[in-house]
Length: 274
Length: 87
Image 1 (cartoon, rainbow over the protein chains, first blue to last red):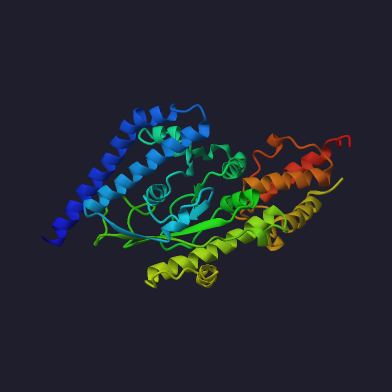
Image 2 (image 1 turned 30 degrees about the vertical axis):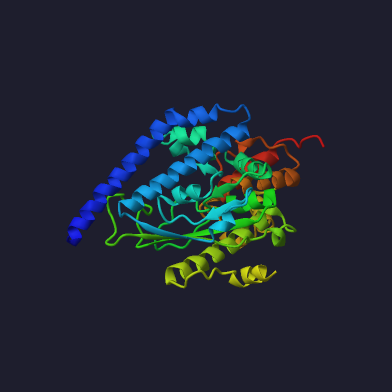
């Protein structure tokens, strides 16, 4: 089987996978999810039920793409995501990063951009799962901090959108603002994909020359305490700069092929000895 | 009555004080969001500080169309023409 055949197969299979995703989102969005949503009058209980079901369907989607030979992946430090009430931040190289993350975390709130609330396929899952809309602007930080205060987990991509390959990381300060307001540590997750695919501005049918491999590495928590005694506007700037530096180092190491040596490796070593 | 130049200088020092923005970057045509990275949360802090400094009430729509430093200077200058709010 030649290279061209392999490429053609992966284009077809990618289209098939995405079609399944859209059809699945609509079918489940009119059946299982609303039923789960209405299965409890308690909003948190209902959200959690739908979110667990969404998480399961995300895992099925990743399994489908893997089974069709479209991707391989490895997860490092998964056990660190097990605890509830975590504030997870991740870099955002590809379209399906959130699919992995939600699949790995059975109950997690997400911020969903306005465009998806209007997307015919995705509006139902994001609505039934009780995800947070980014429409509210200034109220968004407070809404996210409140979610964390209720003991729920939240995942945020501080870049706000996918990374433009070749450009420096650009984080908005919202993630830092949420952590500072809620006074919770940030749990960093470094996502890399090699060769890069499904990046910003890249069409789904432009499949890479080889099968892409994702590495999703969960890091050790980044505390906010060092930033709490300055005004929040400045603290958010300093913390955001620190987060960008952390991710730049971590992404570089991850793509450089040194297995599992996060920037704060010394600290995690120390913790293990305790 | 402050001149627009004085308002501009004062805004520069406020931006340095609140957000550590280098005054050299604060020019009249600098865009608050694109060039100076002042986001919507910063805007709330900035308006609070301007309320304190000017002693005037500020309606949100007075700053709605502000995009550049020059726009902000004009808006603050207009604000100063109003009567101070009763303390």
